[in-house]
Length: 265
Image (cartoon, rainbow, N blue to C red; front, side, top):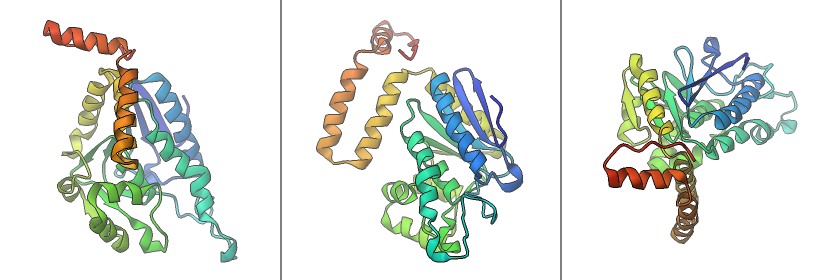
């Protein structure tokens, strides 16, 4: 596939989506947004796990603040501005696609993940960060509110007080503190980030794909709902999982004391 501002690779059933505009710290443009959307669909149909990462020294600096960028419209008449429509039409659909992916995915974060870029990073099923990674809710510094589902993701992960602190101050959150706050799964050295992310994704890609997809759905439902709804969702998804060939293989491998060979069926 030919893209201008991202790259896509399928390696051993792992789809690797790399934001590829290092000169702007991978700032989002309309071209990149469209390409990300297309790439997510492609990877969902051709891989069994995904990695999202950024090229160069940063993960993603959020939407480009270039005045010519349609993602940050700066019309002279302030009363006519509606940046919210940009979220509705372009950015929120990306987050929804990631939430509803039928395969597990990993964020591999090097350097800065700021603004919407932080939302992208923190939406991963698993989040691996290099030692120099930082997460910045930069919005208050430019007079905006957090977006990309950041208020939802952070408040449910690190609590109200810490979420308020990050969003009101716009301060940088280091990888070390993010790990301490359980906001990321693992902090690794800068030169091993890609290897660690790939090995983790490959292990997931070799797993029971249908069950992993259902686990994702169950966890997201639990985040968004009450106890009774979570129990009912688990019951419904367990029916689907129990009808897969991977379930039969998993049980057989356990009984026979051997490694399971999952096919994703």
